[in-house]
Amino acid sequence: MKKELASKYGKNVKNILVFWPVVLIKVMGAGLSLFLTIEVSRRLGLVDSGVYFYVITFYSALAMISLVGTPAAVTKYTAIEFQNQNYLNVVSVLKSALLISSGPIVFIYVYFTFDIFDSLEWLINDDVTRVLIYENLEVVLLIAMGMLFSASLKGQGKAFFAVFYESFLLSFLLLLLVYKWPVNISANLMITFYKNSLFWPLLFISFFIIYKLGLKSAKVKIYNIKKMYTTSIPLMQTSIMVIIMSVTDVIVIGFYGDSSDISLYNAASKIAAVGALFLVLINIIISPKLAVLYESNRLSELKSIVNVSLLISSTTAIVIFVIIFLNAKPMLSFFGSGFERSVNTLILLSIGQAVLLATGPSSSFMMMCGQGVKLRKSSIYAMLLNLILNLILVPIFSIEGAAFSTSVSLVVKNIMNLKVMMNMVKI
Image (cartoon, helix red, strand yellow):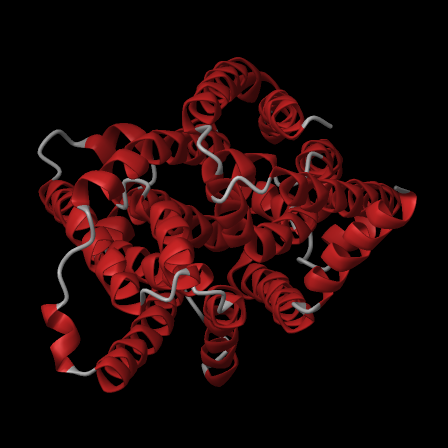
């Protein structure tokens, strides 16, 4: 029995280690992203870098909302169809996702272009930030398209290319543009750099797909819309809850504070999120496998891969938190003068991120294994808790209040998800 268990653990560890190129490129991408944040913070200063990071956060949230949960559905059904060697269905899954998400994307673009109800006027006090958002709304479409392409690649098991696009390429191109430009860079110019770094890779990918599949692939029928829609809607609601929870702190800080507060909070968030990098890696590697194992009712293998993932993630969480706790101030000093003020914010955020990582692939597990309703409930509870705490604590404690609110909501949500996962696999 012990030999059999050790064999299963060894096999899963070996399968995970096969993905070392993905791990490598993800780590390199995270390093570039952190270095880019440091460089932008130094070049723009506290105020302008806060404007830039706020605008990009706002666009990313809009893009995820507009996709109505389709990226997770694309990954799930692409993995199943690819496993069954139904390659034409892989194309039809992507076409179906594009059709489902096209309406919301157009609506969001038109709504914020005209902004009849002056939503941004109420939400954002800074005129410069509002103008930048109005003038660059096409970034939302570019982000959304990139997320769908990446989701399809993940479902096909081509995690390396998905991670290369998501994590490495964008930061690499932005760094090239930053270093090629004169010293004086504005928030507006950085957003233009961001837009170009998204557009040209997407254009290349589109031409590459046409070249590989041919124009006749356009005649492939759309994947079962009802099936995709049924899966996407619960995931959409969950995604929206996650988005609201992830941007609530920034939005509330921007409402009560100023751009410099956003810069301080962003620097702390970047460092604290190092732990989440490892969770993303685990999810990239095992999410398609979870879907296939659950669909084929191979529960013993499902339990084994969950156990290995939890062991790796919890150990990594402890190590990362200790390192950040002992070196918080020196880490923040890299961002420039004045950033050391967010030491307490960094430690508070690191606690929440440590719990997020320690609970392993619980959220991804629930998405891939038919527990979308329970995942949605935990997300709703966490979102409401995060919102209430932010509204109470940010006016009093500023960015420290936001960090505490975010960490508490993360702890509550992920412990709830972990309990569901452990019950399902009988751990």
